[in-house]
Image (cartoon, rainbow, N blue to C red; front, top):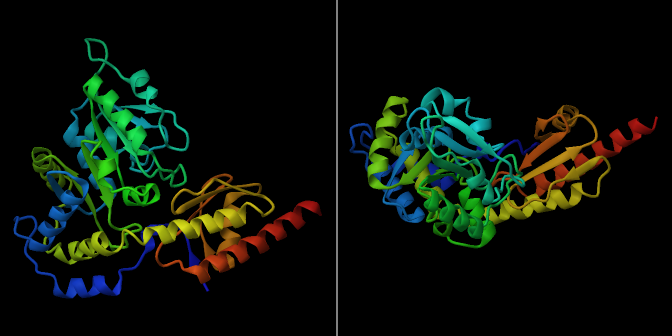
Length: 345
């Protein structure tokens, strides 16, 4: 048995998605007559409470289109210290948008609202103006941590007072809404724009959606074209996205429950100190090298990622069931014992 917990991006399409692909009505999205893409975009805008939406190939592209559309070169933009947009998107804020990145400290990715004003720069002849703040919910490197609706309300209030906009990297925002037990609109209504991934826990093979005001999305389409993100018969992919949004959201709670099982089990093992799991990501501090943990677990049929010298990440998803969770717990327990014995020799 192999339990692949490297990421929720590895999920395979469901049977219903394959059926939707086979029956999808197709056009040409670049020419503006792709009916299945249009249906997905309308559904996405409706679910997030936004005027409009645009389907893009990836979450990184969605985020960077949003950044480029919101800003002009030289603007100051606020990000959390370990935000995906800064940490994992190949320096795109500097290369594509030419913005000044100002980072904010956080508690597992959740920013104290007071940090916005502390890092805000008012434009004058010496300093660039801060025009945008970007947040991430759930937070990847924070271990799938969730920012509350109350915090988002504080961010909104401060941003409005300072005259800046808010973009939400909501790659896993539906995980956040499920964990909080709220409609996703309660989160997305408090930001100007939001991007979310269909290809993570929602199990589509490819794609993300960027949602916001109609005039913003019109300009975002220009940036999508500029970045090579225009796709032709994209309804084949959009059909899967529609299934994701209509069938796959509520089941995210199963992933969260399985992640909590892993965390609880790991906490009882020697050499491991797991971060409390709030959604579907479990980050574990390891006494031994994280690379050693990754390589030796791979040999036992458990796939995970080392994300720091002593930090390993496990991500639950629909293709990891109870049998895979049991296999993971048993394998980690065996390795924990092996490493403990080696330390005592």
